[in-house]
Length: 177
Image: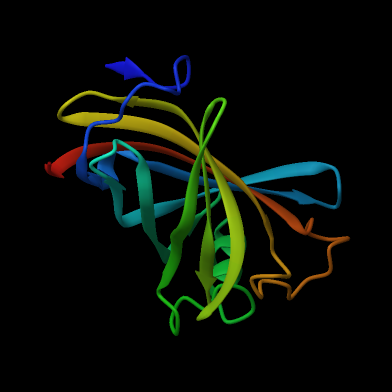
């Protein structure tokens, strides 16, 4: 595979790529009481990446199952998917959709919107460790999300930190090229 992180000027293979749910990990971490890091996972429902004829990453869309929030605490899991936080019964999807995508020294930056509970808020996602060959690819995407901005603010930031760290480690396969 071609490593884009070490040579971000190399061309990406043109086409539409689909993320592979079974080979994609979505992790979110929060600080509890300012001391403890609480990790949780979410399940990818779908995702696409578009690479244009000029070999530029032009669009990213990722959809996650809101009810799939899983930490090591069953009560926390129930509470997070409830109407107090994600309201997964009413809003079953969490969605990221890119707008502008630009190259950086280590990969790409996708500026777009994150939709949670039917409300979209701006977010920037850094995409690094990009590796693609003609048929498969992988990348690491990271972002910091202000939970108050996405309406997940039932508890004060003293109890749960306001900044959520999002990490997506993904594999993609070419659909059309």
